[in-house]
Image (cartoon, rainbow over all chains, first blue to last red):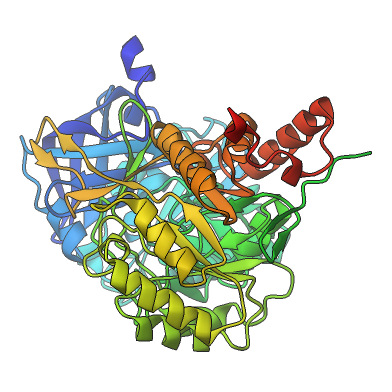
Length: 275
Length: 303
């Protein structure tokens, strides 16, 4: 790392050039860029990503195999995410951050539950596990087309006792059914020292319930509409918590007392809507 | 005698002088309660309009190299009616409801929505610098200000504050018209119309191109305005603009403000800033032997 990188004002936008684009699925791409600060963020931390002329989005910072590089893995969905998805090699985006807290990584038997691009912080978490940890990664997807990061998870865990389980809603790959049913089965069968989840809120809600009700340490990374990322605009509030500033990672104990988690989120105008 | 942080802004009585400025964090009653527990004397809501507004696309907020924050959120808010429902169970928190509109009837209609809510005051946003037909465009029109303030004062017995800013006309005219029309207090100032261009991509960063500059760079400007208003008129003043430390707060009291509002400081120092400022102000009062904030208000005017 260069010394001036550390003096960067993280709230000011830094421009980076996309160096590589990886197609993960027909609707998911990973965009790789060089940035020594983003390369070293902690699992769960995010950046605000500016797509010039289009929008700015909160994105979990994806790992890269090359040192000094980081990435964003995006699913095309709305205008902003589609804008990011369509960025080509050589084009520029702006980044500010890193923001948010990080997962509190326990040791021993760990369970990671990810859905869609919620797998991004899970992959970074895998780079922080100890070689003595026994790690189960549960990847949920709608269908075979939408499964990604299976090989990456296996590769990151090649020195660990591990198990990567895929479940698809339609049964076209791996186990058939909802990922949360497998979570329930796993935590019922054996004790885990830590459960970590990121993905659709209903999936996280059930995962947190399954683990927390059995006294298992569990953390979820919450996604909300964000404008500032730094605790000014209030767009991302979840009850009395601000996802950007108090989170995005919250533990089961805290989440079990939050009435909005798993039930509702705010739209761009700040109106509470049910999931 | 132990000094007290209580302050009055005309008929508005607060337990501490540092309040949350409008536009910041203001969309959930749970968050308001948390801020109140953290030492905020009152919270000012996001500026509410009749209909819900989504605001501008991102980027809407970022920090400026050299200090301060730039924003063009575009007054996103859930609308007065939805908001009133959200705060109808408020018991403890002094909530000041900020309103934005284009014509007197807008304000009159919105005030009715809050009939059953525990509201400490209304603050009229006459100074947002980046949304058409409202904010500064209203504040810069003396006739409209007169009509709005007169209508609002006739529709509620709750104190009404006008938030003024630096537009294209002399803001002191807006202040004078508001006072003549019966306003109870003035908040000065709003963000200052500004912009930022990214040199790499060579385009304005804000999706709206123009926004408002807030934070420490505008503090001396805000202080000057408070001092000018206090020197010219006999009206309670709330100081707003770049306040981030207890020394800043004291400066505003000495210039003539009875209370202050915090916004950007939360982005820099998070919500501990209320408690930090309260403690610092108390310490200063002990040292200088003041028992109330009021004893300090406007002391610098004699020079």
